[in-house]
Image 1 (cartoon, rainbow, N blue to C red):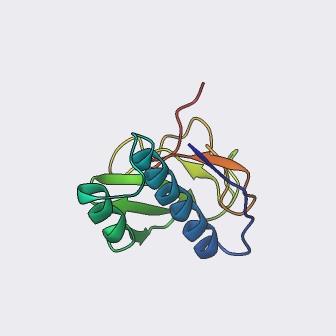
Image 2: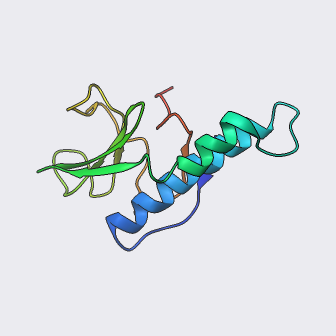
Image 3: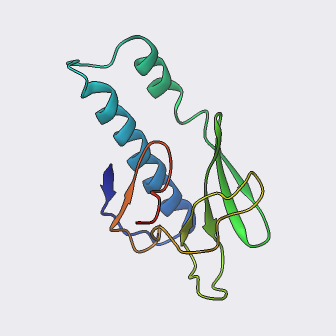
Length: 121
């Protein structure tokens, strides 16, 4: 798990910080198994990380998709109990889990894993 410390001025900038944190977590996880550097599959995955990340804008959310599925949703505008920039875990391919935000890409100071936002405790 990596903690994204940076604050962002725009959602685009916040999304970049979010995915950079997730990528850093992947590198940390891949090298923590006794390796000194990335090799083989892990190196290939890291090299392709950015090109496998797609941003899809919807009416209420920005959906961040990787080749394995939906990474997360980002709230575009304040509504209900959510604020602009809130990170939501995916409930399915086309819908976020609306129980609670997992952080905010504009405010920073949230944990992220290479697999996506953390589950609630």
